[in-house]
Length: 404
Image 1 (cartoon, rainbow, N blue to C red):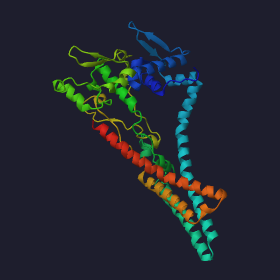
Image 2 (image 1 turned 90 degrees about the vertical axis):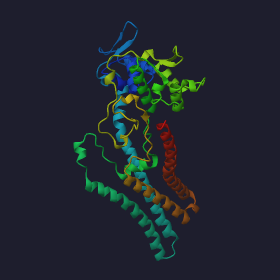
Image 3 (image 1 turned 180 degrees about the horizontal axis):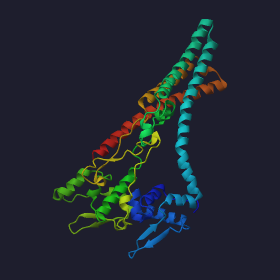
Image 4 (image 1 turned 90 degrees about the horizontal axis):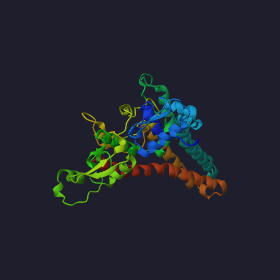
């Protein structure tokens, strides 16, 4: 269909495999199921059917080798207008994200301007003499000056400091964002550092299975997948007669079995072995199919995947336990977060002061405006607090999983 596109993970995997791959190669490289890999390769074949470098080869055992142009992404862009559109969107997305972050940050500044203006107007309107007027107007102006001075302090610091030498000499250097851009990060954070966990688990599991000749025991995948109790598996493996007729709970293997086309078999010794015949087919280029590190990108994209191996020295990294990174409150510089938090507190304090001045008692649009400002101030300060509490809970769970 002209409105269907292959999964980006599959396209990237085929690119790393230089255009020649079996479904098992793609599943192992991209961390997707075999059925998903086959469907993606079939769709790519249909989209590139008019390209003379696209073909299929079938061996004597019925295994299909998919052959595409080496620059498969470029070929897809030539053949599919929708794929070209997606490519343009991917290029524009970082810039649009930056615009969105700046817009959100400027929204806070505009909100503070409105609050301080209303404070000055309300204070002047309720004053009986010139001295009270001066004190009321001064309070709103002082609040505005305080918020802008905090912003200017960091803005001029960035201007005077300039870009460090690493920006020009290190291709992986990523420039820090400004205060305005960091306000969004203060409120909403920067996403899950462990996104892609299931894909990475599946990719490593497929790699271990292929290195083991297509058959593995549950213990071999226990550090990669999510067994309910690793201590029980160890006891079963090292002291089988100590647990007698205990029932082995290996339901945690089911996702890998379904996605990678495996089946359980019982050996003559009564052990359970999981066989994955479909993962053994290969184009012979799987060694080139591992994802590579990206070059310089957006500051907010750094640390996008916090997954890492516990240890990679002296052994295969695919066999090392998969360690999740704890959630951080924000990736923005700490100084910028302090300014964002202070501006949010100033905004909420100003709105509460407006309430003391009697603004909610006014009717019509003024009353609606006040409660809108109050909702904004409460949400701006409440969302980061709720995120901090949620991150603490999730980090405890992450720490428990990493210690299994």
